[in-house]
Structures are given as C-alpha cells and as structure tokens.
View 1 (cartoon, rainbow, N blue to C red):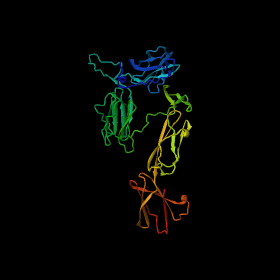
View 2: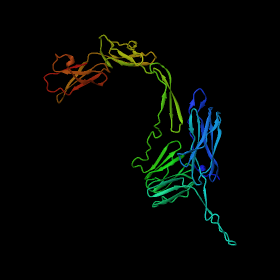
View 3: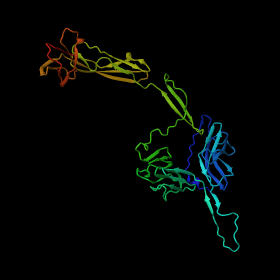
View 4: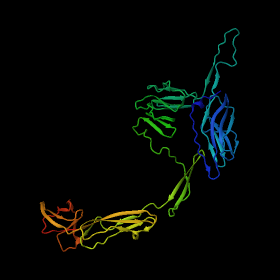
Length: 463
C-alpha cells in the first residue's frame, strides 16, 4: 500500500559538512528517501549516505513526532566517496498513525542528520461483526468498512477549529459567522493549516497559500510575493508566510506593525569559534577561520582573508592662515606645515613646497605642499598667499543710529578683518575684533561698525 502523505509533504535537505583540509575527508552526507513497503503495521525506511572517504555508520531515527524516540540498528556503509543505499525495516506499527523519520550518518568528523520525512498507512476498520453470519437464502448486504488515519495537524481560531487529515483534506467546525469553517473547494493536497480570530489559512503541496473567512483587513488576500511557502501562521487579523529562501511575508492588520518584518530575522544566536591572528604591526596576509555548530551537529565554516597594508596618506596640516595676507614689499616667510603618518610617524621634514611668492607684485600666489609616507601614499594641500598693498581709504559715512561705515581699495581677493578701540595706546592684541571686511566689487572693500555709538573717539585698524 503506497503512502500518500510523502507525496504531499515538501521536503528539503541542506547539507552543511565539516571538511578536513589537506585530507580530502569530510563529515558524511545523509539523504532521507521516501519509505516503501507500507503494509498495515510494517514499513521500510530508505536513504543514501556518502561516507566522504571516512569509515561511516548509518541508521534511522523514527517515531510518531519530531522527537522521534526510536532508532534502527546502525549499519556500516564503508569509506567510499559515492552514495551508498541504506534501509531499515519497521514492524509493529499502528495503522493510521503518521510517523516521522530521518537518515543519520556518523564518522569521526561528526554526526549529520538528513531531512525529516513522514509516512502513514491507513487504518481499515470493518463495519459490523467479524466473523458474521448470514442467513441461508437471504441476500447478503456487506456492511462495508471505514478508512481512517489520525489527524496530521490541528489549529484553533477565535471560536472555531480546523483539522488537517493525512489525505491532505481539511475539516472545520465551530463559529462560522464569516465562513471560516466553510472549506473552499480549492483547499486540497494541504500540508499545513492555521486559524486566526475569524479567518483560516491552508498551505498546499505546491507551496501556495489559500485564505478564507473574515477579510476586513485583507488577511485572506494572499499577496503575490507569497510563493514557495514552507510554513504559515495566522494572528488575530493578520497572516504570515515563511518562504523556502527564509524570507517572511506578512499581510492583513498592521496597526501594531505586526506585518512589518524586522531586519536580521535570519540571524541565529549560535556560538562562533574563531581561530587565527592578525598582527596589525606587520604588513602581510592573515587568515581567520570561523566555525559554528547547530543542535543537529551540522557544522558551518568560513574563512576571512585579512590583508594588513599601509593605505592611508599622512595627515598634512597647514600652519598659519589660508588664504594668507602678506604686505607688498615685506620679506615673506612661509609659516609651513606639519605632517604625521599612522605608520611612519612624523613626516614634517619630508614636506616639499612648490610655488613662489612675488612680494613686490600685488596678487594671489598658490603654494602646493606635498608629502609621502614610506609606503608611497601621497598627501597634497594648497595655500593661497595674497600680496596686498596698504588699503586706500575711499569713503567714510555715518548711516545713522550711531553706525560708522568706511570703504577702501586693495588687491582683489584679499581678506581683511577689522579691530577697534577707544584707546589707541593699547597694544594691538587688546583691540576688539569686529569681524571681516566685505569685498563688494573686485578690489573694493567695505565695513560697517553698527556698535559705534556716541563715543568721543574710536580707532579702527584693518589687518
């Protein structure tokens, strides 16, 4: 008798194995295959195992739930690198019960478990007595028989219930004010069910989802993105689907953000062991090896390559102002710059300055500062030196409210600040800084002192 349930249940196997570098050996790879020879209380479990070049034993874990609880006797599968068929015969099973099983393989590099599969045999119960007596010459009426199987899954809604039968059909009962227990005709070949407050969901063997019942918040309108679904869940007025690629889709009521899937949902809190070191003081290439193991014993590894290299240029800092104002005719002394490097340290002595300043000609002169570190990383910065003449005063005015305004001419692009005092005998450093001068036109500068109130005298200096 062939099991129908394995044909309905989508299964997937992800093999994560530990590889032994340089040996060509790794953990075994078990694959769980469909059960065969299903007849009343007996079945044969099947699978294949690749020993990966290491002596390996294999067996099956099985039982009426995901805890399994039973194992077949271990059997040797050798140390080849090809897939080897394994099987285990079961007897004394209960007809109508759904059984879970998986293929397990072990070698000295670890234990690996294959994907879960299920099987069931229908229970056939005769109606009437057996044996039964039929009166001679009276026509025989066969009372028949009943085929049954224990429900594969159940779900409880607000005031209704659902049951998934082993033949992939769904039964609903309880409150039906929104049709939540009226199973649609399309709900066949079902592998999972879920119930909300007043709506119901079913996941079919083709990985599609069907919803019915209350749809006030759109909770039964399955979005087009809900494809390749492997699991479903129903909240009060919203629905959720887990896709085969690990993505989660939510729809329906979102007043509390219950359908906004958070980032990092696939991240697991498993310990990660890291081996290897990185010497940041010695250039070179270093390897870090990462390893983690889940509760099934499956191991994942990854390797990171870290290249220690000097890639940052020195930090080049100008001393003094930029732009730098310089009076025409006066000797020019470059205030210079400093350079520091994370690896090479002080590189100030290696700074090269390109450019000249003609102190006898008013105008702007660029200076370029260049420095490299011992790895050849280059840093460049610029300074503009503006050679200026003494300002030529061209206008004075009192616009009102005690303000004082003056204009003057100088080299276009020059920058000036104004200081003021009521005591000209004070040292220049004690004068009050009023602020910068505005260049209204090329070479024409102006400044307004709005703080020049009723004072007997106030002196200004342009710098």
